[in-house]
Image 1 (spheres, helix red, strand yellow):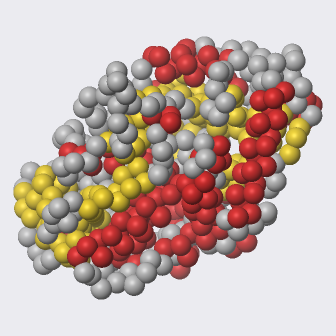
Image 2 (spheres, helix red, strand yellow):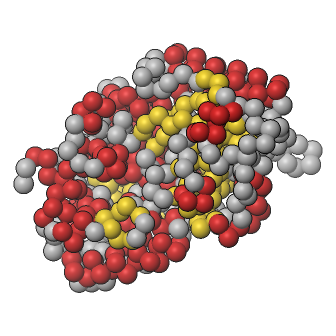
Image 3 (cartoon, one colour):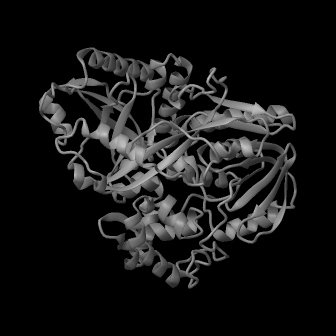
Length: 551
């Protein structure tokens, strides 16, 4: 195997490694830091602590990116919205972290995305002027964050002809032009989390999926292995609770106000060619937009909403028809031909873990979740458990750094400052180096410098070069890579998080047979695990069904 055919040293997550490390950790020697939750912030905290030389165990009741971190808009925002609401510190932090991702830590996963705001009759000249001022202010944020102009081009005004060239789907009647702006865009949010977890693993962190935290204390956690049902204790000098919208279930006194963000999934052919995304102004709102985001895989996302969620927090939020109708109505306000309900082939919703710090009004209601601050908070309980909540995907690294800083201080650990602002994730390289990677561009955008290793699987077995689903680019080689190196344990891990085929139920159902056939050839179990046939590490995997409890 040539160097190009190998994964990054120590970064392979497999069923066998998980089993071994669960056995070594539960009931084993004390670790320096236990992280609960393996979304972006939790995986980021595991990497931050491991990169400082601390011993780390990180657990999640389900899979990597099972919760909010896989339901985002896939954008790395520069903070313009927060600048408009006078949250200057949040806006600047967002712009800085966007630059870190795009230029240093994950340029293979984050690239510049153009957006067009169409100036339709529904956008007054005053609103258009305000939006233009906002985009200019956003460019000033880029400059203040020291992000290069080559990374994010300048905003500019567009003629009506230019606007229609970038977005032919727009209604031409009354269109007086548009505003072009740029922001950061993730290839996929779940892939970012996977890269974080694998980079942490390469630094020695134990990444333990399907391990539920039942109870937290300042000295560790009582946990249950969801694959075997066995319970035990993980002892730790410091504990970081990064379980997002479920944080309050593990630590008393944490009040979370979840906000639901819904996206629709359309087939690309429904909207036609879209060289740029769209900012569609929400009628009656001065600083809210519906985003149209072409994905490059035959799909387009349309989102998002910002609605409060009351009651119990589900593992997988449902999308109400009211959200679907709202998004279609706003989208239809600018299209030449409206999108109908039957054109929606999928939908997903994520719950933002907003910290509730506001007092209710005399009617018992707080402010809209759209108006709740996106500042993150790091809180230390009386027992010494550090909880990190709030924030957003863009600022995961800073949230993780602050959480580990607090854990180090609270428990007197010996560790230096965080190095993660300059620490490349698995697969990362400078754009010039990525351009020289000998692999298809789509694989480079998903796997970075590891793309040739994924490609090599298909070269050795032509069956793995075949697409698992007509019209979707994912191949069998990517499934095998997910099993051998990315910690996937069952069909759901592969379809719903490593590849995102599952965002369209029809596609998921169509691909499931091919996935099971491949698994049958590899392991013969009907569920992913024991996948030695393509050179995997062997070991036991998932059952395909797991507890739906929170944790």
